Amino acid sequence: MAVIHQTVLTPTKLELLAIWLPTRPWYRGGAGEPDLAKAGGFRLDDPQGEVGIEFLVVTDASGAESAAYLVPLTYRGAPLDGAEHALVGTMEHGVLGRRWAYDGCHDPVLVAQLLALIEGRAQAQDQNASDTPDRGVVRACTHEVLLAAEDFGTAEDSRDGTELSGPHGAVLRLHRLLRSAPEGVPPVPSGEAAGHVSGAWLPPDGTRTRGLFALLHTDRRS
Figure 1 (cartoon, rainbow, N blue to C red):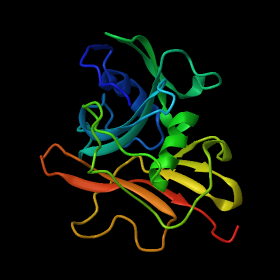
Figure 2: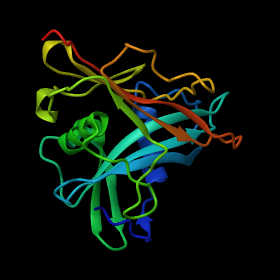
Figure 3: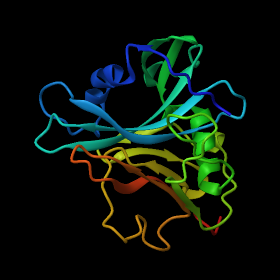
Figure 4: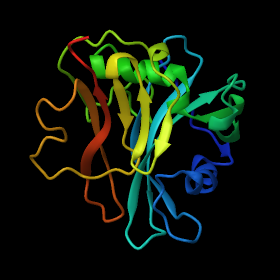
């Protein structure tokens, strides 16, 4: 179980993201620097206890309208081989020392645990407390998936989000620019996907909202 340390990060996650987010094709901010705030998210545990896994939701008030972004991150104690293009930045952790922060969509540990969450083999964890499940994260899976992280190719960004393609038409899609689902309406229409993850965040107006984080499509005939 991951331990959450109450310590100082230099630079902070938001400071790193203020530089990194505007380089993404799905970013919709204004012409100036991002105006970021932490708005929600959750963690997953690495079974090996080596990699920190966080699905961070941040809001940005720099544009004409506030926007919410899903930023999956992994934190490592050493560089991840072959993932230089996915490095968000490095931080000094008050307890753990130097940490390398990566766009988690390019980290096989995060992809494996996201699939495990969708299938019900992993439990979402509270973002700020150790050994505390996050019951607000909702996952669903309509059938056995039988896919692993190594089955998926390189994560590809577009204006609509990030996709990883797998065998036989399988697609794991992460929604980066988050949209709230109307109250009482399921975030995913029945029968649209093999599995999904949804969660909540707190926009600047203070009204708690929910929406779709990740969606898994598979071809059940293969």
